[in-house]
Image (tube, rainbow, N blue to C red; front, side, top):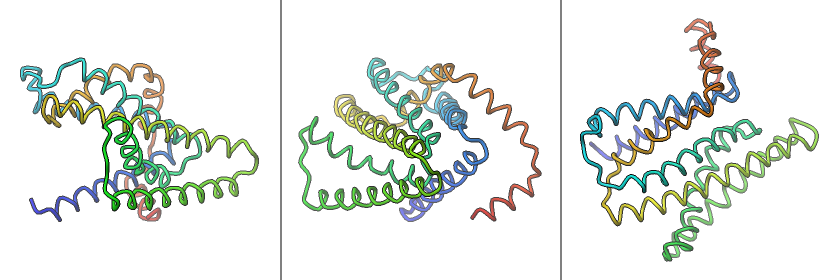
Length: 234
């Protein structure tokens, strides 16, 4: 596959995912749990059939390592979902999560004792400035739209949740890197177990998932109207 075509597929998939997720969140606030559950379930079923071969294929990475990785992965996903309930706009949510490069570099220096080139430090500094400016503008927008300290505190809670998830995600990356060095890189196996093992954890959110499932099923808008509204949104 040509690299340009692969990059185009990734870009198209990521941007369309963000657009449709924002449309869902605007229509059904707090629907992040059911969206994440559907994502985990789909990837788990695909991996169960084509990667794990219904658990007949032996694992390369020990199960105990997956339990640690899966716990962090599940917590990060849940925190990122709930942050959308705290006045965090979807563009800021997407841009803020790009700060994983910064968090990964910090933890790489602290834990793995890595050293980076000057160009990488400058690049990370520029990304940090961009994220800071975007966050600052978002804070001013929240303050102008909703008066009172309550909305700003609500927004700060959301930003704090994103920050915690950011560093936990980076720590998971460092842990995953150390596992790959010891047992070899088996990304498809890791993707399957990272999505299959957390599925029982969604029982904690069963009522919320069921409630939003009912709301989704009661959405009786004609398909043509949904398409027109999507085009108008764009």
